[in-house]
Image (cartoon, rainbow, N blue to C red):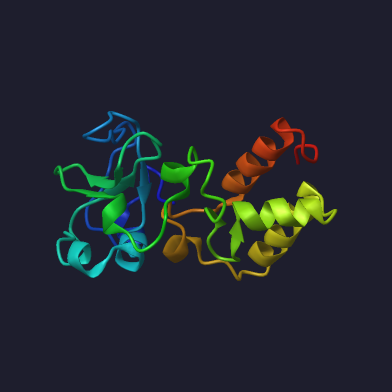
Length: 171
């Protein structure tokens, strides 16, 4: 993920953002996190990709109540209908969505995590498997995960949710 103090040239986006600028979603006002341009190029549907301004910097809105996924300082926004995948942060409140992607690179969904825990795998083991792949440099979060960064916090969030319902202890 691009930090506000980094040059966007480092993430294939033109321009610079000063360290004191906080991107705010134009719809929800929620603070955004800058994402590499390759994330949008990888995950936008063709109709949305045709509208992408590659000279703009884009941020990710993680507000679950807001349909906006990416937005630019120039006011361009892409919402959940513009993406090829379900966005974890936007669908987390939908209890019925057990196939919700949690780890986009290695195929961990809410359903798979629940199944593995029922089959006596621990949260630590699940995190360990994913971490081993990350350490082996197999992940491609910048092109697979809509937030443009590592999914481990999403996995931990699901493990905590399962634990709060009386499942296996939080990892």
